[in-house]
Structure formats: structure tokens, C-alpha cells
Length: 92
Image (cartoon, rainbow, N blue to C red; front, top):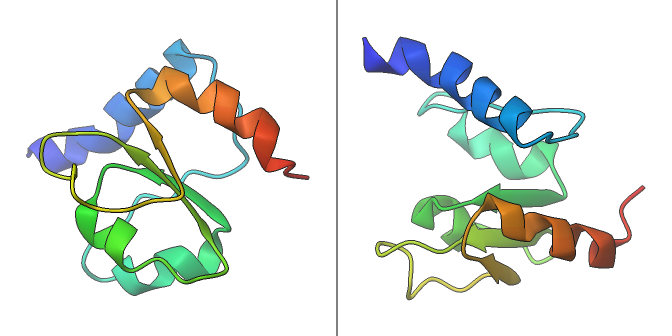
């Protein structure tokens, strides 16, 4: 039952911080392999997603105890840290 509440809780969190993104992709085991093909930049704490990053994509790791040893292009301590990185990415 908790899974059904993840989307509304996440959307509330993003709205609380004024996140302005064009698309949010909620993934599961069925569509996991499509993630990197849909986006050029991914912000995540998920070690599996970080480890599967193609060379032509950008990963931004939200640092946690379970992904400390996983490499990424950028690392932030929390989602608020994304603001400073966003400006340096030169995204359209």
C-alpha cells in the first residue's frame, strides 16, 4: 500500500521546493531499463541507476550511506544542492 502513496508524496515534495522540471518519470522493475534512454540528466540516490549510466549522459548523485562508493558526474548532499549544478549544465 505504501507504493501507491509514493507518487503523491513525491509530487508534493517537488512542489514544496518549487521544482520546475518538464517531466518526472516514476520507474519500476518493468520500465527500469528505459530510464537512461528517456533523459540526458538524472538526479538520483539509486546505486543501480548510477552504475548503469551510459557515457553520454549526466548523473547527479544525492549522497546517502548506501551509495557513498558509487561514482557520478556530480554529487549533492540534498535536493537543494541541485540549484547550483543546474546553472552549470547549460541545459536547453
